[in-house]
Image 1: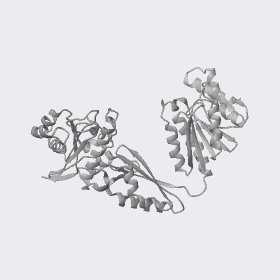
Image 2: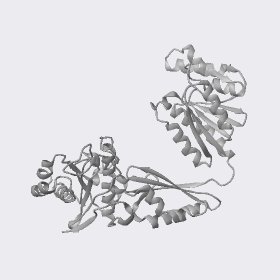
Image 3: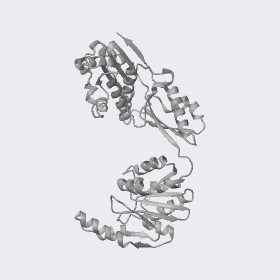
Image 4: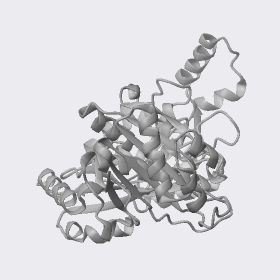
Length: 431
């Protein structure tokens, strides 16, 4: 069962609105075994919608169209479907009455333009909209079937869930592929792909790499009659090959994993931040109940505050500057001691747009001070391409990820696999 997606709207082409509908549809269709082969965006135009619809049905079994069903003059999906089918647009009396009743119930007058939503291509089947005014449409066209749905996300979700997904699922033949997503941190996408070559060679298994700043999700898809068995074998092999680079699966996030590990050990963490300016503490307070394992933080942005608030030795700051591995270690130890936490986590670096103390933009150091005097510092290599300030948010976000991942591995007692992880300057000290 092959489906193409067609999203209609000038606001999508111009970037005013992110095309979340296509992402939602892709996920739901894949889950029921439907193969989405193409996703296209066109503007609010009569001819582009007709051409894109006909083009999609020349290849796929069905096309799902979102947008262009509203009451305004630029909502032309109904008109385009009627033209593509060679039929008339007819006013549906029952639908017109429903629109009038909704207007009365809302206390608003029904404007004449709204009655456009009661116009239906001759021969089309209405798809009831339980949460909005404009119904969806199902229409047989040369080459396949077109499903036209409102562009308003919650209305589209309702019609798809109630009516379209069950119908499409009934048309899927054969075994439905199964999927699982693993999450990694601190390793580049190309390095992961090289490392996972043995998994790529497995019959019936496909891998997809979905990168985020300093993280990569690995989606495993297995197909065939033994799909579940293949999926389990592939996941086990990936975990063996990557070790602690895999921090979780599906909806796991680094902050939640860290909190879980701390809670299991009746431990907590305090943070000392420089270039991230509070982002690390904010990440550690996203989860409800995080106060049980997050003690607090100190944002020591100015160099002087690293000495006065965190106890970083003045001679170290004078000799090395604020962006230095030894400074990061001292910050971690200082915040751990001052806030009475099990672990101290610290970050310092250069977010840009200009170098600092001779260190280039993108230089960062993350450190953890743990129980028993153990401490670890790492200096990840960031893929910074310029120094005009545009990289600044990315550098700060990647620093947060690297810091949380270092803390995770420190709690587990697991060091990075340095020869392939892309990390540098790693060392461990015990005092």
